Image (tube, rainbow over all chains, first blue to last red):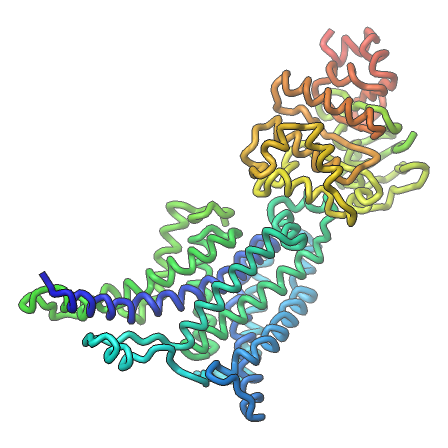
Length: 340
Length: 233
């Protein structure tokens, strides 16, 4: 039997490299997937432009952050980007409403089949993608400032006397706190307010909602505003946690869609659960367990290999596999969303 | 009459389904449209609601022409409609369904809600349950309740008893009589012609989109020709 401290060390390693990063990444995916699921529920199409809209919102936030920094403004221990966030959201809301006015509304009025809207969103995706690269470039941008850690690995070690350190980055803490607040706000909005209920009614039964006097244009507008806000916040949190690169955000489309579909597309609660399912699957499958196992088994059994199921460069394959399995086995997802 | 569609002619883009058909109903009255399959019964009702492009004819509500108003605008003018299928918000609770029915109202809706609960006591019991979990008959009650929440002057029902048991049907008709007693004009399309004509003040027998017989429900039931051709003897 391994000693208590060794079990604790193994636990700390696991928490540090799997649990906390998974929790933060899952929250970011959940916020992204909420946007996808809302747009799907109300506008009835899969918005492929979502990843690049996320990049756009993050870019605006970064530009405002730089401007604020150049003015010498800071947010104390918190990242300046949080101050810039409202402007980033405003920019993204504007982008979504303008795209809706000039692209999606036309197909909606024509009652085009969903696949036409999906293709239109693909076009929007390319345009926004080009716009973002044109403005901020294709390089990696780091825009985190303020206090880097809530808990430093070294502090944890001196505090507990364990060999292994547990670090909690501020970006991770901020991500989880903001995600919890936003999800609570969103559910309150959907369950309790008139506008939120009208969104649910419209998503449930469009014809009957029209017969009840619900204004479809207003519902669509609110949906874009919420989706734009959620996706911008998700993008900024992801960028603070890792870094901002247009191509990475385009790639995030896959895990975000996987999250929405696994949870049951059109179901907000599904998007949240799906976000964590995808994030933890990705982290758990690509994490090398060598260190954790070494603490738990007798010395002579210590593994030589990394004990890694899949290299991190294949992490997108995880989302893809889960997506395929869900669509084959349970196309409605965990919470019985709509069938695509 | 309070709501009247005169000389309606039109269809869903292709050939005309309605051929010079006239339908009307007054306040505190039940008008029933019956006829064989494909006679254009539901189409006639949809024309009254504005869900159909009319080539000819006009629709008058309280003397004002509403032919060019959209269905939503007619709802705002006091015309409520209960579709035959998908007539509740399945993922929303009974209470939320009623609340959505009253979406256009700015005033306090609790009185109307209590009235609906009084009319359909089972709904009060199941108020916190999603409408999708209710039985067919209970769903129809939610559907009618939702439509009543606007405090409509005209209530249109498209085959409200489709797919419910005879006992539930009788009960539903009883409730509809109560709604009539409150002074609402009720226009109904019914497959169960005999039972429907029994409670009808006015009956329209449509064939191929035309008025074949128009009379009181009682007179139509007594008319041997109507009995033979449309009521099975």
